[in-house]
Amino acid sequence: MITIYLRFYEELNDFLPKTQRKVEFVKDLLLRTTVKDIIESCRIPHTEVDLILVNGQSVDFDHKVNNGDKISLYPMFESIDVSPVIHLQDRPLRNLKYFADAPLGKLVRLMRLLGLDVHYDRKITGLEFLETALKEKRILITRNRQLLMPNKVTHGYCIHSNAPYQQIKEVVRRFDLKQQLKPYTRCSICNSKLKKVAKKGIINLLEPLTKKYYDNFNHCPECGKIYWRGSHYQSLNKLIESFKR
Ligand SMILES: [Zn+2]
Image 1 (cartoon, rainbow, N blue to C red):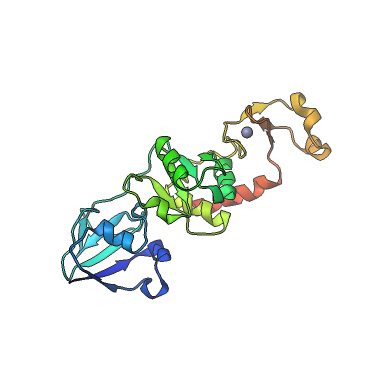
Image 2: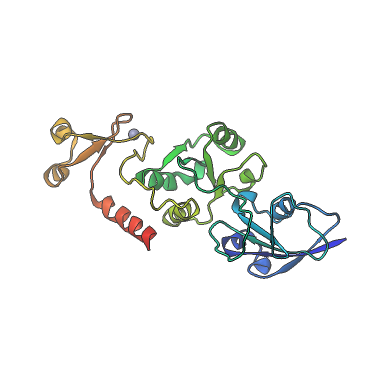
């Protein structure tokens, strides 16, 4: 029998039962096993863990534990003054593309309004979602932690919150996006890039008050939706401001 001591940090605790959150707890194992297996036996997707310290030394997922090991596990961006360390998750890529799981429609809309490239199809769920995201080399965004467990998933994020405005904050923080957002450049309905359109060309499609108060418009060349900086613009700007704080 092997006894190890585990301590998870920051939002990794969200996955644990209450008695194991933010404390060191003991786990007994029948055999020596890898840290990755231990993480997943705690029902935490490996894509959530960026740094593992075993007795203060940085290790990777394949490291096999020994009796008495003290293991500390950190998510992305948990700053810690230990070097050299092995970061297990890739640093943010230059061109991030996402595939969001079916229940995340409201988050998808916000991500697209901030200019992020998000594929979304309510009909694609479960394993089909997983396979399609991998085939299209998109980052999986899901609340279903099981979908992030397979080894072949290297880029993914498990959304913790229920509330779309919290969810978007999680995504921006997790992928360090606050400098990369391009608000009002992408269609929230179909993900296409927006184009400027002259007011006179669409004036017949506008409501009287919109016609009166707004002069600058974009439209989606794919689905035809027209965008202007109306009331939703204020709340989105507040959100963007909150990322900077
Ligand atoms: Zn569109």
